[in-house]
Length: 218
Image (tube, rainbow, N blue to C red; front, side):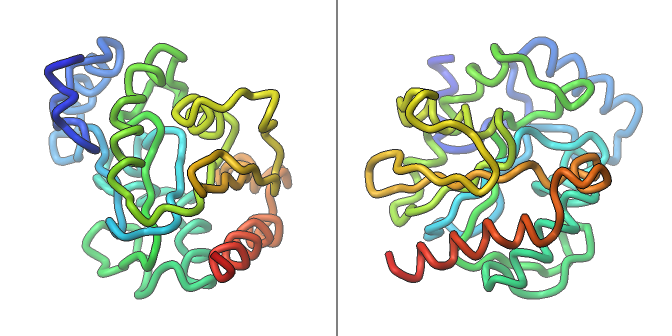
């Protein structure tokens, strides 16, 4: 790990740290050589005040396209909401060359490589944490973090050394996590959550209203 800590915020394309994820990456490269198939880099402005944290790249979404939340339904809801609340401009066309740009925002994942069944292990999340920490450290204007789902929420708490008992995950909850940064929580904008009604568009928008109000006062 020590040799890779020089990578301030983004793992190398052939990051060797998680054997299971490396094997899955290699299998995907053999099956789909035209896909990105690597640790997906963060997307957005280095001057962002808002960092959006997902769990991990989707197999046929970010792992295929090389941009977070690009190419699957979660991106449809996320990027339309970012445009709605002034955190993005352009048109989202589910591909990395669609010209969409983020405004005052960045998107990353707690685990940068796609995991089998979309489920990283706790060890894989811990192994990727130094890259996540470096990503946060490289955002000097950071004021708000949006965690999409409980695992992303827990990764933020671990990185900030905040106990779970001090900041329980709940949709539309928010927590002071120190350093002038506030953590906002949302259910993940996955197709499963929206199809089952666990997350509606209005519920998702409500979280972004809170974030926009917070940043407007910051």
